[in-house]
Length: 297
Ligand code: GRG
Image (cartoon, rainbow, N blue to C red; front, side):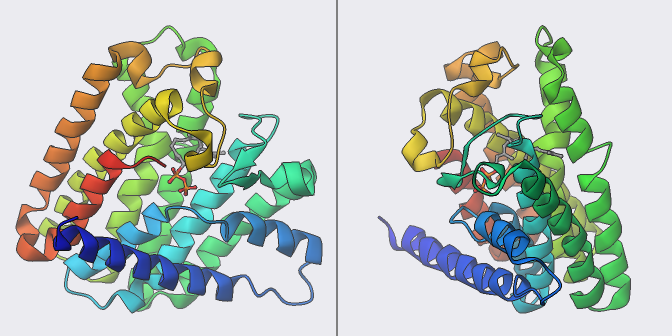
């Protein structure tokens, strides 16, 4: 492996360690939090995983010339919302999955009611963390508004609603992209924007991060669909093949594997192109985009 790749692997491992340590700290609940609920939250939130969204927050802040330690609370907040969405997505009423992040899914281990409550608690805690720990207060308020929008009815929740309704099964590429722009893309874009806001990035930098996030989010989803077809359950830590079994719209289902792979590559090129205003400071985000394309989990 060339040394630049090694450097990026070491750097992203270090960022993951910092995020994991901060999440560990945020989940030391007081005696009023029932032990069963605390265990369920920690089971899902602290499970081994990519931490893509927190890494995007931290790398976006650094690309804007900011010390990443100041962006850690926002990195944790986006991971809390993301983990809540995974816990709820796994529930029997939604995707009904018994495995997540290489472990039994939250409801499979702790029961359905506790799974719902663990997700509820994480969603609330994300906004507590942003409002209390992001400085200055004006940046905290902006971050709360942006994350609420990305997690809300016109983004994450709306995309999930459309994905669950089979009326879209006969749809085309526009419908598919509209689902994933909200369900997957909004949280990825938001992660980058929060990093830029906390770093007090200028309008050109935030717009560049937004475009990078839009392209990266779509590429991430295409790769996710491809891994659902030809990935390994052991590497992914979750069940595969469910989308096609349930007749869901997917990129390889609509476009074929070759065209989906080509499209993901073109989107990653566009994402990297959007980093131009950052010059050398965008190098880590560029490496992260390449990793999203080449990932096997
Ligand atoms: C329940 C409101 C609500 C939304 C659920 C996130 C989601 C929406 C569903 C998960 C199913 C899925 C395959 C979504 C598309 C891609 C995606 C978000 C995968 C999971 O994220 P990763 O791969 O997972 O970053 P880790 O575990 O590494 O964080």
